[in-house]
Structures are given as C-alpha cells and as structure tokens.
Amino acid sequence: NILEKKKIPYMFTLADNSLFYQEFELHKDQDSFMTALYNEIDFTKWFSFGERMMGFNQWTILNDYPRGTTHPLDKAHKDATMLMLPTFKKLIGGV
Image (cartoon, rainbow, N blue to C red; front, side, top):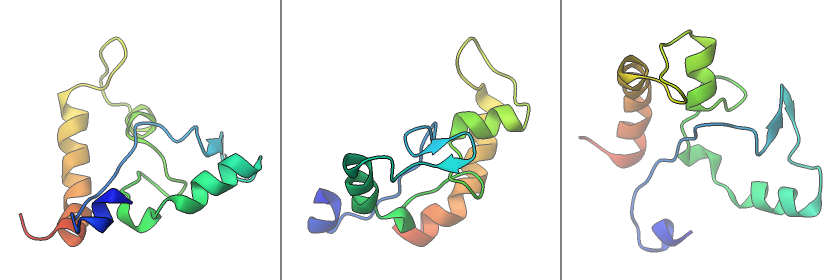
C-alpha cells in the first residue's frame, strides 16, 4: 500500500459492497482473483455501514434518506459524516 509506505494515515469507505457481497452472502472466494484482491485489503482502515460492510448508498436506502435521481441528498451525507467521524479520528488522529 503506497499510503502505508509513505506513512500517510488514511481511511477508506465505500458506496456499495457488491464487489464482495451478493445480497447477504460474502463471495470473496468465488475465484482466485477475488480471494487475492480481498486478502490485499486492510479492512481495519475502512469504515463500513453495518455488520456486512454495507456501503453508503445501501445504508441510505435502508434508512429511507431522501435521494436525488441517483444519489443521496445532503442529510444523508451529514449523518454519515457524524457516524464516520469517530473512526476517522481514531485512524487519522485529532482533527
């Protein structure tokens, strides 16, 4: 990871978890490429919404946030920021 090599603190999040989940089933072992990709990711540096690594878009739908044509509106972003902030501070440091 280039960020770790350069000692840059970071936190990732995701909009959607469909790369590794199909409905509620983890499918990281569907082939050797997916297994290798999954094993390269340090999930301790990620913020996910819920227990099965739900993405932001999935979380907003589950919680009935207002949406534009294809994207959650401001209230969802503000609430997500408040949820992510403690993890961000823990991983990145005081802000």
